[in-house]
Length: 260
Image (cartoon, rainbow, N blue to C red; front, side, top):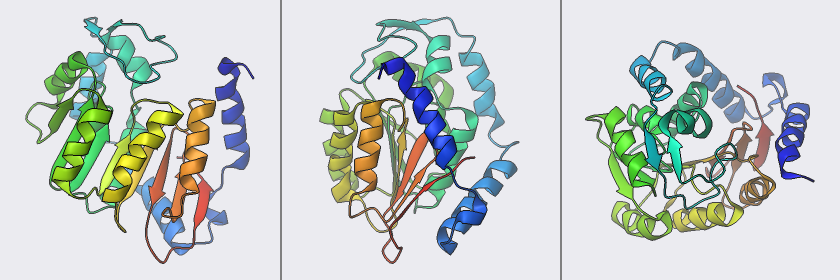
């Protein structure tokens, strides 16, 4: 199958398989999903300064030099020099999914939080609003970190620059545990599996893992399917744009395809 047809196929299969509130048998999952939709509904007027910043980024014509360690962008074709507005348009989460990450971060203790893939910092800024203590965000491109810092201002965020495969282990050892992590970098099978293997020893019963772009490509879909089957994972939620993993003991292992 040609690469450009894969997202269309994945989208059609997702919509055919997705569930609704009434099909969720587990009280934990049903409440989690109901409360997610309430959170999104009640958050429409929250964090508006981040959306003002997004609008500014979408008009920002500054050309950034990008050091790209992952699969890059389908729209931008691994261009070394890219405009800020193009990066913001094609390589960032929309507001609804940024708030979804907020919600699931809040389902963990939220003290030790990691984001892999800062980009221009929109998800970073959203997460900073709900983190209880430490937020580390990792990015390979110096120019993207500079741009993210411009928007995030004085938020208590620790920016880590460089190849994530080399910078992540030391931070994990320093933190000792991970409550919530957003994997949104290096959208390849190998990169996603490798990062999760690094993080897995630091996860615990109350940890939550979010993985971005799980249907971005055939290999990302393969990575998601393998990860969801891991014995440590008690619950996986597929929202098409991202996947969410829980590790709670006492939950019957289940997988769900949901929409927001």
